[in-house]
Image (cartoon, rainbow, N blue to C red; front, side, top):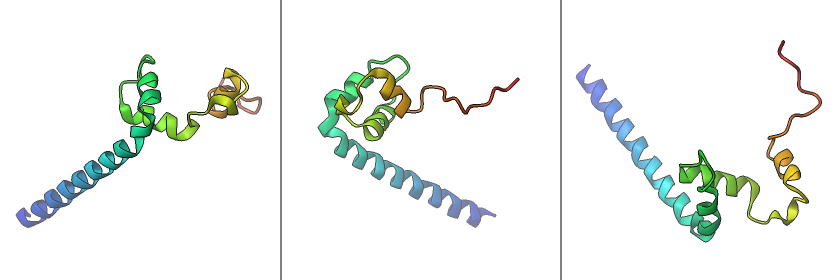
Length: 88
């Protein structure tokens, strides 16, 4: 049992190290968008830099692609569609 726990612990530590490596890589790649990420972080409930980076990676920083704020919300899936069922 003790050997199995040591193996599991080493595996967990390795996963934590890989997670740290990926986070460093993501932060390095996001440096170009620091200004936009900091702006997103001013939105209430956006406290995690990786959430802000996710928004930039999904939507981009060129808002010319969206004629209005409603188009952006629709693209992001934040508006209801007419095919949604009501849960009554």
